[in-house]
Amino acid sequence: MEYINKTVFLNYLNCPTLGWKTKKDMLPKLSGLNNKLLTLEGKNIHKEALKLFPDAVSGKKLKLERPDVSCKDLIADLEINKSVYAMSFVADGFYAKPDVLKKLEDNSWHLFEVKSGSRYKVKYTSDISFNVMVLSKLGIKVSRTSVLYLSNDYRLGMESSKLFTESDCAQKVELKVQEFLSIVDKASEDVQSEFMPTPVLKRYCKNCPMFDVCIGKGVEKRIFDLPRLSILQMDELIAMGADTIDKVPDDFNLTERQKIVKNCVLTNTRYISEDLKTELENIKQPFYYLDFESVTTITPLYPNIAPHTQILTQFSLDKADESGNILEHYEYIADQTRDCRKYIAEKLIEYLGEDGSIITYANAERIIVSKLAFLFPELSEKLNKIIERIADLELIIRKDYYDVNFHGRTSIKKILPVLIPDMSYDSLDIGEGGDASAAFAFMAMGLYDEDKIKETKNNLLKYCAQDTLAMIRIRQFLIML
Image (cartoon, rainbow, N blue to C red; front, side):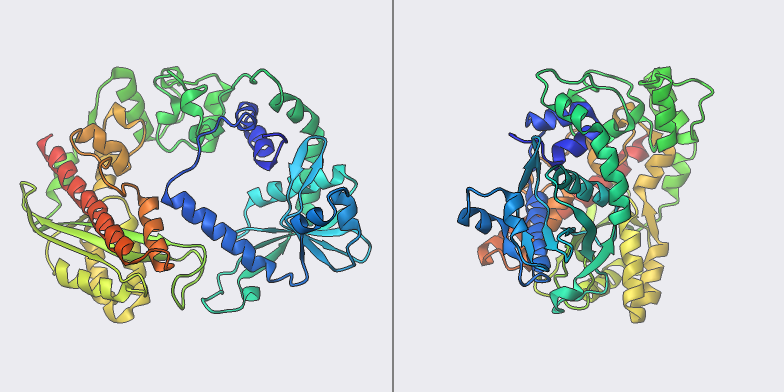
């Protein structure tokens, strides 16, 4: 990376070490179908946003036409109320590329930033402020700043003007720019240094992609293994130097679950609640194991759906006996060309009958069935009865079982290798929820031919079936305890 771009600078604000590693191009590369979908949709959203500026000219085109003229002088020649997009600016080693700049009557500029979210987020202010800071270093006055994000009122087929909501953020940006200017020289010095800044533990480390090869490398009993630590708890522990669980004071305010985890870590034991047997006995025959897959896209795939709407697309359902033997297997995957939620709801009602517990992992299935009941009032009574029968296996584990190898997590992908070492998703062509959602989206967008669609649907069915089989194996493990 020749210049310091927005990602480097904002990562530096979170952690100087991360900013330095970003500048040195040391971060892991994003991959997978989900990342490809986000990239594709992001480009499409920007194309739609440019329709709001029909007279806008490309900064790349201007630069090609007059390569000897600075970007500042190029835009200075634009007429009042004209806009420019994809124009790159460099000042003092910092690189910015604002989405759209519109020239105002006083020769100042209105900067627009396009975002694919459906509400204003705090991080948008930092994104815009970085661009404004770089422009200010060039003497380019930005007097107005706006974020264009997606409107929940938009529906497929509407004009592009209906897709976006504009939010003024000039006051927030002005304050943030002053903050950035006060540290920009130090940031430039640190990220361009030959020597990496010494990493310091902070709450941002919890979800940092570099934690395991940075300050967390080789560290056992990490405080982040305590489940659901609040921001206040993390800040207090770090401030007192408690970077590992064995350093957490006995009188520190922890939840009951956190105390259990702490004790398991310190004694290297697992926890089995006295209530586990009762919880498992409350699950009644016949046993149904249910898993859903869904798709969520930035812009709607089907009519009468808002941006970012979660659409149920498939299910796997196993009916099993007390020993975990599968008696019947049901599965369904939607026609990607239309919204099949009502049909799926009807099939669930048919297959699940009226008796027995419906075992799920996490709360997603309960939430989705609740949404189906709201969406289809004529089915609500039967769907609400299904909700009453749901038994959440993850909730049972959270309350009644803990293994130190969970490292504070209880998602099915985290606990399965611990409880069922011989079972894995590694051999599947699609083995992750985000990629499953993206694969269906690509089909619905018409980007796959018939052979690819057939192959993808087969892979999606295998992935979903693996989830219900995993639940059967996990419940049998708990019963054996």
